[in-house]
Length: 268
Image (cartoon, rainbow, N blue to C red; front, side, top):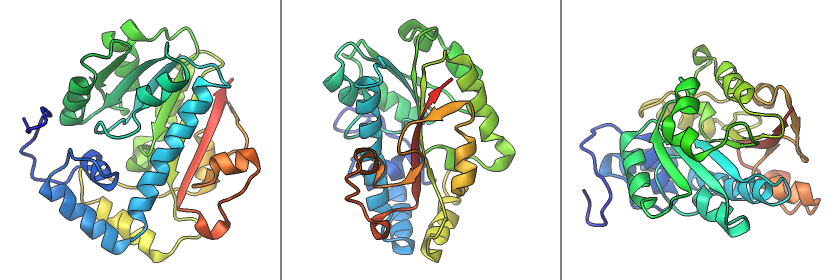
């Protein structure tokens, strides 16, 4: 356990959750993760900006769901290490009666989240794997907090690009989507190589040396994840820009966009 009360680990391999935490400016990471992040940054200097823009979109999405969409319960799969701008903090700022279930397959990330949430009764963190969605949906801590017969905000932010095609991520999303009632929402972001420089592909290659694969996908491929959903305007767009495009302020120009697609869909 570290000096701040969080769990540590003796793992020798860089971990995607801890790398992401480091890129966001968090403290729950190790030398091996920082070394991997340095190599990623060298290959693609924008990666830290991309991580922070991705996190900002998560906040935008949660505020939209808890506000205009009227969602009061959230299932965040691939939630990673506890860091700034957690879903429950953002949701409570809009709807104090919101409930949040965090899911991650990294036991250290889950342990740290549980410590963070120890005095937060309307939020839980469980160990679970998107490869086995039925186990997540049937977990007693999830079913004890969330009413899955009522609309849910399903958050799959920066996780699907860690699934190769042979893992059939569209089927995994379908299993989750089919288990949730109409009026639920799907929020996701996904890395892409569309129109990007070789640096992005190089960074993806380096990511494959961590604890997960890495698969860049095109906009057409990302759109397939929203089958049986009605996309919320402005649809699937490159970040930053989702909120700007939605408000038609368009402060993010095409030159400012990063290789991350983002979108929100209302499940039919």
